[in-house]
Amino acid sequence: MHLMVQFFPSRTVAIAIGNFAVHWYGIMYLLAFLLTFFLVPILQKRRGLALSKDEWSSLLTWGVLGVILGGRLGYVLFYEPSYFLQYPLEIVAIWKGGMSSHGGFIGVTLLLSYAIRKRGISLLAVADVLAVPVAIGLSFGRIGNFINQELYGTVTTMPWGIAIPGVEGLRHPTQLYATAKDLFIAAMCYWYLRRIKPPVPSRVLALLIMSYGVLRFLNEYLRVQTYPLTDLGVIVLTRGQLLTIPIFLLGVVLWVWAKRRET
Image (cartoon, rainbow, N blue to C red):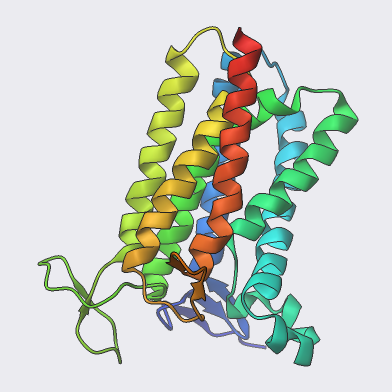
């Protein structure tokens, strides 16, 4: 039996082997996982951890599972509940797209918390170490969005506007804005992890969550919205902005709690 191998058969697919397709988005997830596995043994010293590669591998496996399950279920519940109620089998069809970063945050938090507590390790110390690779991993996801030409922005006259096939006018490359946002957050978290002493667990995590919340909120203003807006009376919010508010507030709570522990 002869299998046909195709490279770049479409914008979203990198390699197709027969009926099996390797999507760019999946490659970005894999790269993020590999980078995290490389970085955590180096960064863990900043929080007094000494986990082996096998222990990190186990924890990161739980983390990847949390990202995938949380990201998919978050998309199902937050963005398309009526559709998936009609077609429940489509929930597992993640290769067709549809992930939520907010759901991914929840999923990875729950499953990592479970795995870490079983080992008697400091959850907040591990979370601080993971903050940097998590932010970089988010940037990889946004690069995947750019390759897929999805989640693009509103019409712009800026010289860096991009053309989207089948879409009128040049558009803000909001995927690249988000990539820059996540890399900036990663750099800020790394600086804080290295420079600020004494190391109070949860401060880097809080910095990640708060900065992500603020910058994601702002980036939403330039993104084309495919879901209804929410009118709160004093302000109209996108779905992404609405979901970002509780994440930002969680970061504020963590920051204040850590600050009180310093005094």
